[in-house]
Length: 357
Ligand code: MRU
Image (cartoon, rainbow, N blue to C red; front, top):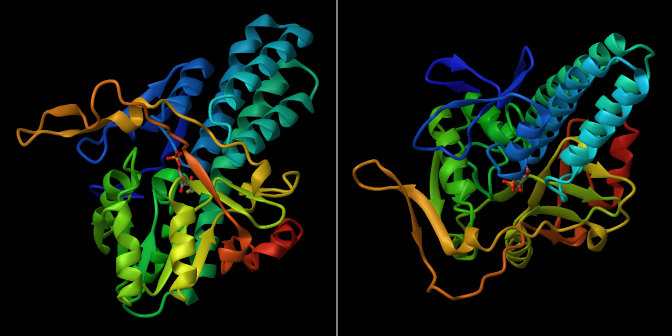
């Protein structure tokens, strides 16, 4: 990703610190944040300072590598192992729906436990965390190439939430083919769902598209059906937080509505995700745990005033109750194809992507 002429990733490690782009401040301010230990890293994931399936995975992987560094002072292998395993639990509990989180943390744990000696375990954990982040970048770039043929010249694409650079370390999942199409001169246009309650579309996807120079319009979450019925949407591409073995897809709340509307209007509905988002042990969507977040995210909306001051305003009457499921499940029958780094798969065949080369 390129921000004001400089290359960034959504997350990286600098010495013992995990460094992230503070996504709470966007689109109004671009700032980096240093997370000094695995607890701060876990808290940053939980509070959505960083977010998006792949970035959560890469950050959690680095978080466990931090725990390995912290545990090294214990010197004996048993205490080291117990400390790192506790850190694993802390990290995994932060965001229950995201498959990539557990996938990344368990790979770092396995790497650190595969060697004897504390120093070797730290080195192996760090190397695996760096490898996982690099893999996200490579896989996103492959998703861009594989998804590119779906985007014809001046295609109008609807997307939901932020499945962009910020959500997948670099390139993104849903946005990757769009960015490549733009760079190849196909001049795509994107309908960006605002994505209440956290507004990842309005605040993050729109900001990314502006950095890349991609034409787009932010629309209220309720507007997608209107544009689909008018013939103004050629295809939908969204990301995923977990894909069950039968091809059901968990993604940001509101995705299901868009998939049903796309089906009703004969519009292809694609999901883009790296293979690490597929959970072969989860048989179907109903078994995916859906994260419930604080109801204040529905009651309060953040932004800046006309004077540029950050502010939060309440949009519900005091005393009103709210419900805040962070994700929903789109049944496989509404998904035209799943774009992975290993090809485009029919949802029912998604397990094949885990064996494909
Ligand atoms: O709650 P968030 O902002 O982490 O949710 C993000 C999404 O739902 C994205 O669409 C998803 O992570 C896919 S992009 C990697």
